[in-house]
Image (cartoon, rainbow, N blue to C red; front, top):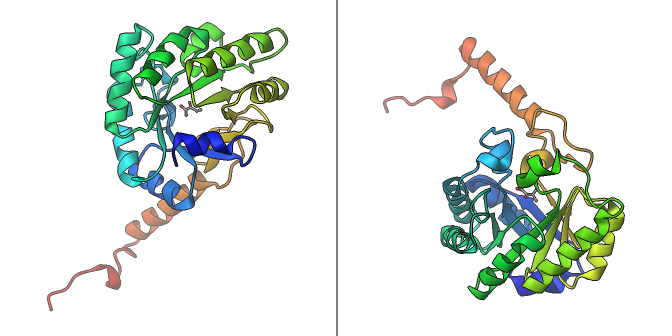
Length: 262
Ligand code: KIV
């Protein structure tokens, strides 16, 4: 996979993206034939247990991108630029994007509309492919006032302008998060690059889901836009309860789990 193939998929074949954060999940993504893997800063929530993505550091992103790259040496990997790694200056943004590329990413993702367009232009000039991210942008949750659906009423025009400005700056694709379907559809139709939706309805060029939501690893309720394809949290708990029972009852280790002198 490369950005040319991704661009060619628009209008022809839906693009499948999933987040992954470690070696083994990356290996499964690679085997399953996922089109692109996103090492999202959602790792702050689902791996590190933070309330939001704001606490994620560059070092967290680098470590997890390196693990995912080791598990999926041939996959197309996008690394999320964490909060405050690109907001201070374009120069810092370029330096930090370079760090994620050196860790093994094929592209980086930045949140925001027109305000990040100048950075996008500079990253693309430096040879770094960029994915945009508009709609609900979790790094701005305090400014947005919560995790609310975006693109309603007059907000549609603002989102369409943002998407166009990012496309003009050179992004190769864009995430539309938690956005009303009509707005996501209009943006998808107005761009020549693929849109990747998460809670943005049926008409995007591709879809992305968070690993833990898709596989039911989270113990809480998942948002309405998620489809759970497995219930691993329950399966893991059942397995652990069985393990506890076996150890407590001395059923494990059994004869076939032990070593004896020949
Ligand atoms: O961090 C992340 O996982 C993301 C997706 C929700 C698109 O940005």
